[in-house]
Image 1 (spheres, rainbow, N blue to C red):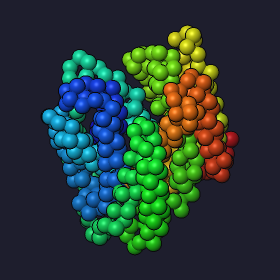
Image 2: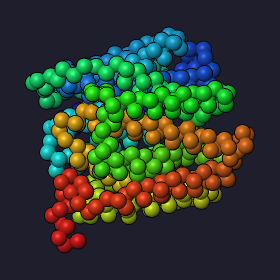
Image 3: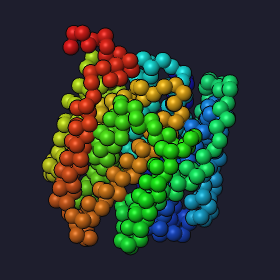
Length: 460
């Protein structure tokens, strides 16, 4: 199990470093003589670098070999982390974060390719449960780790801790990962890379500006408008190009299209908003400290972890369709149910509710994630992984930006009240529920060779 553990380390580091900086911003600002309000670029540039670099993963793996590129990504991530910790000014730190995002993007896109290339589909379900948990733990663990290291050691250690982990993972990957014996000499799609990269970067920066409220409305509108135009052109280009960097033809695969593009994107937008909104409501609405809020929301990760032990059996017994059709209304109701949170509620009640939400959110994301690749051919894995992770990051960016925009609209441009958060949780619950219409189009046989549900279909 060392190979899956190595991939899980890469996924966890990528996700952790997307979130670990949040609570460290005051310490970084004090050290570099910058107000925390000017440091949002450290988060945005990392996410933008992730999304822009992700399409390269498949092409690089085909050209230079999966093992070589993955080890290179780990070394880039380790080097960039060291540079982040050594940074003496804001621009060196921003540049190092961009480089760190490049390494993280390649680890994220190629990690799943390694698993799907090394194990039969019947075993990947259980393995991917634990690897996806590593990625989903980042938003929950990151603020706690960042706050603790910044408070008790130094903000620089939020980056230094990556170095031994990344180097150890690189040594393990070099000895265990599969090699590509015959590289594919596909020409690099430079026009596609420019179109997708520029469009994605504009969309991420535009959504971040919406969330941070640090730019004029006209400028945000221009950024988002240009992003939509460029990405539309990029989509037409990728559909017509002979060897596109981003293979949109994969969306013709029905299970992938339903599991992520139509249904999965909606529940990702709804469920990801909770990670953004709940700590804000606890801190700004209920007057909790960052540590108190983080300690409560962290319970969702415990619920996700415990559910991972039961997911293979659950999917094996009921299949993807029945699980998603049943679970989607439940998880949508749980999202909307956060509107009933009261400051006077006992702590155990809040913890129990967040834990329950973590359990059912885990069921939703584990089901859609594993169904997405169920009908992907082996030669399509690298291209699928790049497209999947770009769409995932895009959905998360849209989730945070949309939630921030709606919250600002509800608050009338002023400080949001607890009632504004409650209304927004109901809206996000309805968005999540809309995914049900997509999952109803699944059949009991979809993904059966991954879940093993076929063995029970005659008795269901």
